[in-house]
Length: 418
Image (cartoon, rainbow, N blue to C red):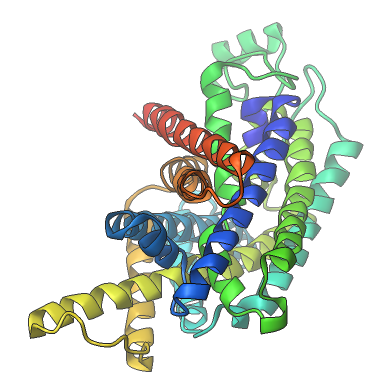
């Protein structure tokens, strides 16, 4: 969907450019963490970096952004799970696709929330390493399926139908016929498979989508802390960050190109919505994406527990009049209650606040992704003079890109939702 919005040429260039900057911002965060750990061994999280690197107000702001980012991401994953699993359930139990869809989606979201609750109770982020590998392998299957479809049945003028009958590249005659019959099989244009963006607004929509796809920065700090001491260095981390961004780019690049080449302007925010429920291979891909989403949910939630525990501890200390008491470890009771409350809140939001997947990803990517991935690392780099002017120039670039994504992406997303 992001490549459809940006066009076949700007889309890949946008992914490569933002991926490079995302890798650079990961290095900035780890350099800052490594420096802080020499003076403050208690530094553990992204918010700790903001606290000691930028001050209490910046840390409080970042806590809010991380909470909103995690809530939006988990909301999006819950909607994605309903998108991909509801058709499988409807087909498996021979249900009515029109009458039973809402009930099935609700049941799927509730069941997945129960599974996510268990995964969210894991105490260390390293405990999710095997599920993360499973998510990558599951995503790879979907990528291969999309590439196969794009090669064997590419989008051409007048014949760019998905499995639901929608035409992603209508001719003038087909567009007139579609309007006269009111079938809505065309998207109202004849743009089809375009090398360039359809409009400036469509290009701007792609920025927060790509930013959301590349955000792993909040979790990266916790991953760095849990590395074995012999591997905990900026030199090693630079290789880890580069490898991670390369893996993500290798998965996203063919997905974006193949989806657009196959379905044209009818490419959906969830590309599996372009496939019919009778497609067995697509059903297998839906299960794979569901596995990936279930694995991603606890990763997005992981920083939330530490923030909520810190906030609750601070509130309790103020009530007792002893704000300076020592840091306490997170109890198992807090872990259990927090996981239940969080997953229940996400489920309620998913059921009540809409299910436009692309809009959710855009809004989260704009408001939170631009800030967490680019703007705050940019400010940290600008404040650091130890690495020279080139490092500060990089910080300026990160800050500029982050502000651009936040402002333009939020405006375009909200405007499209109104």
